[in-house]
Image (cartoon, rainbow, N blue to C red; front, side):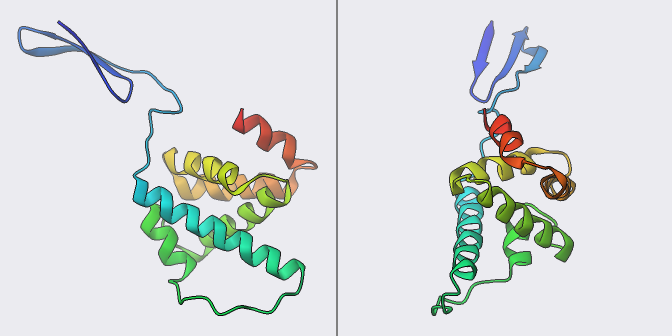
Length: 144
């Protein structure tokens, strides 16, 4: 008996026992919960809005109170530290400044969450984007 399960998991059952387990990697193998995806999307949108407002010196509009960035990132799966939130914010600004859309930035940040250490992944991404001469080529390559 051969069974194909969603999520790219394959195994063979012989006499009621699992004999072989295979995990095939693909972009669909990691499906973030819709709630987590929406929380991360709202963070990216807020950072983008703040970035655009600072560029045009627009007055701060009254927005509903929201939790701190550290708390919101902690709820998404990051460690919620100040260092991580700073790196996350700077990485978002650099990605959005390189003409990525919010959705593109979200794909890259979700990839960071899939890594064994999401906090280090965001810090390394931010560090690379800071030192790269033209991060847009790197980012477009990551998205393809």
